[in-house]
Length: 286
Image: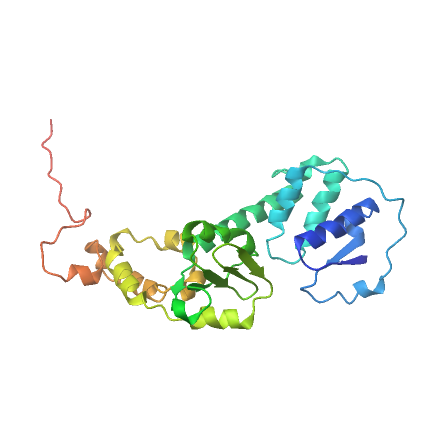
């Protein structure tokens, strides 16, 4: 098996993959080593590329390259090997490799779905914290921990909505900064960006927590649905995250009968029974 080394980016992989295709090297002959992982000790045994036939022109559908680029954001061991295997098969005329019904195609579409969902999580669960504009730097900062490499492609969502307001998002791996006109992506994320994103206090947090707690409806709590739509791994980075287990506990302890948050239920006023408590009149038999 021959190691193929590149910088870990999709552009770097694509260039390396094109070269291996032109040389006619099959997937089982190659070991992919990007710049973010340690080299395979056994792969070091074969450091010289094998002899290959004259390089030939290779053409594949543009749609395939788009799919591979998006699937490359999925983090897992062997992410590049699957992409090359699909690319190799399509280049050989086997277009079934792109289909969800194929073994490789099924894995490809699973990764595409996971990447789309992780981008949605970024948009839904990221919380910006405002900073003093006179301090310099971004006006808003946020910390996020995505499961896949979606920050660079998905963060443009915020540029469209925040206009010329400057902001920064830091993650354990990379970061983005919007200066009001251009989006800058840096990998790895600078330590000072991480410190700024994690160390900034949100002066509006108390107001948000009061709103979130008062609008929580225990009568409609469905834990499995909640954890599916808001995965537990995001809770620790959300201001309301520490409140959720307590609100769920109160709901299980009987707060569901009120159909409203405890802080609201204790306030004076007429109590409206939940639907489960309402007694329906019994119709006499016809």
